[in-house]
Image (tube, rainbow, N blue to C red; front, side, top):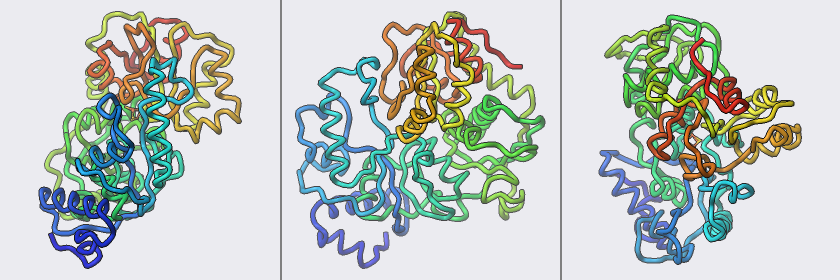
Length: 420
Ligand code: F3S
C-alpha cells in the first residue's frame, strides 16, 4: 500500500506507540483488502474496548489495547484524533436492573464509559447516530461500524463508509485514516440489481418488507429501487436499510428520485447494466412477511420490542398516540437514542409510555445487549431486522408486524397482526 508522508511518520512511531499500532493495523487490514492507499476521515463510529466477562479484571488501557488495537502490549492511549462516536452499549444505565444486568456489569460499564469519554469518545450510544447529531455530508469519508448505520450513511446521506469493525474504526479514530476501498470509491457505489416496485409502498412495515425481500435476493450487492410513488420518511428509510442489511448484506441501495446518487436510473447504474431485474409486488411482499412470521404458531405475546433501529421522535410520538390512556399486558420496551429520550421527556412521551406500563429505554437493544424481560416466551417487533435476529440470538419465536399491530399485542397480550 502506498503511504503518504504523515502516514509513514505514524507508522514509524513519531506520534507515539498507540498511533503506531493503529497504523500497523490499518496497513495490515488495507493490504488484506487490496487497498492501494488510505483516505482521510474525520468521522468514526464504533465501540470502546470489549464487553462482557472477557474484559473483567483488566484495566481500561489493557482492554483498549487488546480489544481495539489488537495488541497484548499495553501502551499509553492518546486522545482520539478525529470526531469519534460511541455507537452502542450493552445496557441502559437507568433500566439496567429491569434488563437483568448485574450490578458488577453496571459498575464495569460505567468505568469503561468514563474512560472512553476521557479519551474523546462522544457517548451518543445509538445505532442511529444520524438521529443524535452525527450526520455526515455527501461524499464525506467515514469509518462506521453497525450495518444499519452504514447502509443509511451510504444510501441516504451519500457519505461513504464500509462496515468497519471495532479495531479498524478505533484505528481510524486514533489516526484519522481508513483504507480507501469498497464504498469509498465512486465506481463501487453504482447499482447492480434493478428492483421494479409494482405497488404504492407506503407504511413503515411495507418499507421494511421491501428491504427484507431485496436483501434476501441481492445479498451484498447494490439494489436500485424504481417506481416509488411517494417520498419516504427518515423512519421508513431506516427500516428499509436495516432490513436489507440483515436478510442480505446490503451496505448501499439507491431509490430513483429519492436518494442523492440516483436522481435518474442512468445515474444509479452509471455505465453498468443491471445484472438482474426483479419485481416487488404484493406476492413478494407476502413472501417477505411469511419469511419472518411463518415459523410462529403461539399467539400469546409476552414481550413487545419497538425501536430497531432506535426510534426517531416521530416514531415515539406515534407510539404514544396508540398508548395514551391504555394499559399494556405484555412487557413493552421501546428503544431510542438518549438524545431523543431527552426530547421525549420534555414532550411528556416518556410519561405516557410509563403510564401505560411500557418503558422508554436507551443505549442498547435486546439483540445487542442480550437484555430482555425475564421469562419471555414469545416476542413481537415492528422491525424486520430485530425479527430476523431475535429468534436466532435469544431463542424465542418473534412476530413481525406494524407498530400498530405490535402495540395492540402489547395491550392484549395476543398477536392478531397480519398483512392488510
Ligand atoms: Fe440497533 Fe439493535 Fe437494531 S443495535 S439496528 S436496535 S439490532
